[in-house]
Image 1 (cartoon, helix red, strand yellow):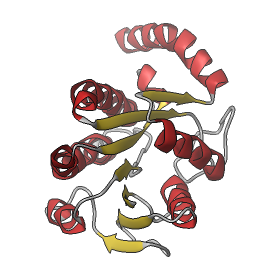
Image 2: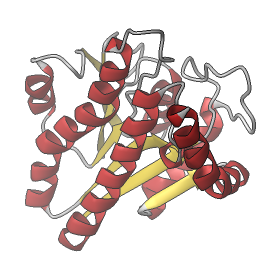
Image 3: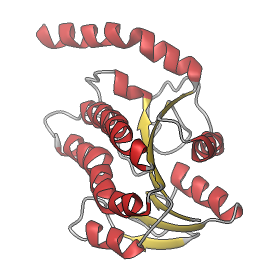
Length: 223
């Protein structure tokens, strides 16, 4: 079995690469920096060379989009927010565009995208991150509805805080390790659900507070 992981030089992507290799998968990874394992290809998902790099990978049974960035909004500099949208959402869409036609031709395949429980919120602190994850979850669920009847499953995995460089908040409730995140992903590989939200306790909290937080954000902006 052959897997492609986009964003596997560290964090969840690297931990997943190790796990898949241990279970006998052949793994190709695309990242800005070369991963220390698997078959690394160095490329930025926002670069003009990214589609060509994807095309060079060939057919895969599993594609996991684990690339992600997120920065706090700083003053009048919106570049980091734009990059969050480019990496977290547009990069995933470009990956789907390149990889899924081959899966459809084969009549089988599985795409997993790492989203976030932040997709339920409007964030004044990191608007680009929250918006990109909201868009990613919506896109993945729409793709699953369209593609699953044709043999290709699409899974949106909505994680809370994971102990990686992305967890920049001073408060990180229910934080899990990358290895625990990989346990969740490997269950997804086996069962191919449309969506998984983990940890469940945090999913319940964010689901319940989402409308409150959205209202608070609107009131904050209107003052």
